[in-house]
Length: 425
Ligand code: ACM
Image (cartoon, rainbow, N blue to C red):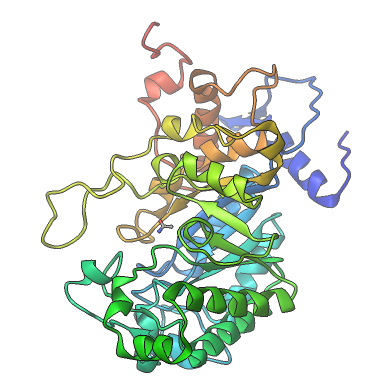
């Protein structure tokens, strides 16, 4: 018997039901019946993030990812769809952005693809939170609108941007404000989600120091760069809010810059747990994406051509067990707990493509899924890596049976003998 308050609750209940069963040697069996389960999610935001700009992922990779997400009750696909390197998104009102900004005409998400992905996700209880990162991470827009982008391909790129190639929107210029507000709202209005991310991370101020167009405008209007960013944020967020959307931003927009954000704004915290405390002090809601626990790309070394022997900024690799120990409420007061909506593990794709998507994500991304669904063990005890491991093995084998290339967590000998490979066994 399955009862729930909503259709979505029934769907999650069926997911739990499927997790009670094993299939082996042509036999389907369970070892826990009869059983009574009362369950509900601890947090409303349980996400997985993917960057599809640095390298392209075909639609089938995204739908298979959504399948796997639904098996562990993740409910938000945070789609960082564009970045400085490429713009693989077809926008009806701005077709040139993808025409000039994709790696190839085949490596574009058409409007139809996006609608298909959104409805595929919805059928699995997953909301698609699209991100068009602005005003940094936008070099590629120069391929269509060179006059909108400052320090385009400036060298050395590291003086002007977080990643090559340099180039950021000239957000102080009114025509750029209008363009960005229209672009974001034109995309957001095609999507059912209440949420839309405008990005806002890693804005580099050096880029604007010698940018004549920006400096002349600041001088003529008497504005500071921060004041111009405030106006840009007001206009772009205002356009989204006018379409009934709630803006989502990376933490710099709340902490580095002095810009006015609507109280509804959701802040993705990625740099440190201390920053979550600072965001909470501002009374803004938080999605936890701490790089030192949840970034799935770390651990592959540096990818810049002339520094290949070095580590990358976010090495080492974040094991599933490291991710699993993240406490999303650390250092917050009980009165602030409600501000934490949840969190996500995310794959930035500088060194990823369809070839390693599944092995690099699964089953690791299930760590945060359990943190944000269960938050504690049924006994009330804190989550515990040793207790979780046999269950994660179950999930990993289930994923493999269902055609997802989830990597082994241990030698199979250990997987079949729970706890016999523990250090003190
Ligand atoms: C980020 O990693 N720049 C959000």
